[in-house]
Amino acid sequence: MKCPHCTVEINPQFSEQYLGPDPDGHWAVESMICPNPKCKKKIIELICGSGVTNPRGIVVRVNPTKMRFTVNPLTSSRPPVPNEVDDLFSKDYKEACLILKFSPKASAALSRRCLQNILREKG
Image (cartoon, rainbow, N blue to C red; front, side, top):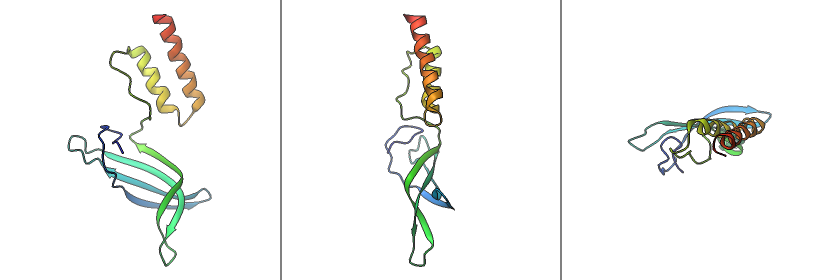
């Protein structure tokens, strides 16, 4: 995987903190520090899925079958904006990418605004 902070390829070694169950499944937080000496930033993910139990029936970890959500850093899977792109366009693009997983409609509105600004300023 690539570190979401520095985008350097790393070998993920997360430690898991079990949070408990609810009607949606079992919840846990996974975290690790990026091993890149130039980064060393914390990566935190929230996971939900089925609980994996030990022989005594105690949940020891969560199999993330329902959800895996990166909490820190809050990033998108979209490529970064090249430096040549004006701030007027890049700010809307970045915000549209970040909000996509929370609100696809809001992301679409920002994307339309970005396109409108490009056509108005450059077209």
